[in-house]
Length: 481
Image (tube, rainbow, N blue to C red; front, side, top):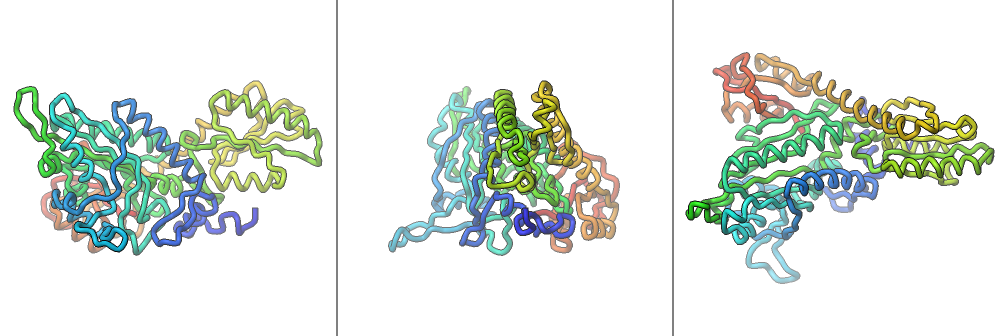
């Protein structure tokens, strides 16, 4: 594979350029003629489908159902929840005309779906018997990202999943929020091998219109955090303006409690940046659409028939054992070219079969994460493939967990805080007085925000890192994407 086809920039030297080359050369995306939009190519979409299939099965098993709601939202709906509307106004695209005719009311292209969904819920919820109402949506949303865009990480249109539920009590809504956060953590850590910090968002950083927001935060190699997903208790902030009421067992009318939660294809950006290397992608086996690629090694047609027969047996055996396998039997490319292509695409395990493997009744495997090459006897094929895929999955998570742990530093004062943010990056564990004024000042001065406040209160160890007043909480600060 030529340098023009392969990755030409080192990840440690220019992460931004490296990332751009990986997502395009590994054929995850292509660019659209409209700024801020991307084309999700089949391989990129297949990884998103793996994420979708895992999460969708968890949601359905817990009683959630999928639905679809309109793309266009009347402006009057957004205005019903004032804080929510104000928070999204700068990001909204508006439809003002139908053909040549001006609309009597502007229509927003959905930046999120709380308002259009809660309007429907106001008609569907009548009695306590209708609750809980658990609906999930797979769709795309549009939020104006005109200045700086990057595939998966920050685009004007993005694919995501958003759940919207209705409950009789705050306690039921609280349980929903935490259950979904657990689903997300399992997806991100067990499937994507990306370790996260979890906790609450501050009042300043919570979802607009929410009672409170829980979050999952990952750290990237350049010292910037990525918000991987959020789960919100919306309280009665939407049920009251949208009149979502139910008749309780006490024969009294009550306002319901609602939640919303979501993850997007931003998950892919974290997977790419955290696990990839100078050869390209490294996709964790659990989420990989192709776990194993099989490449025949022919030397001037030496024992070609025997190689092909063995490959046929190996492919069938692995597929019958529920592995996701691809046979690359293209004759127009050399084995070396294929090796580089599949390494660029991050396939977890490569199996090579050549004349010597046929003679010795073995196959050769190569692990993508460390490029270690091993010989496996035919009778141990399934067992050893399964073991090595698990080793790859565990190895990726362990390495990323060590990096996350080393990225967390403590700061007792503002000078130390600024030095860490500006020099080292990563998460800074610091004490905070609880004032949004201090949050605002820190963001304005050095671009860092509170990424999460731990669920379990941590003992304060200093005064507020910004104002020096008595502190009320420990927060994890970082610059973020």
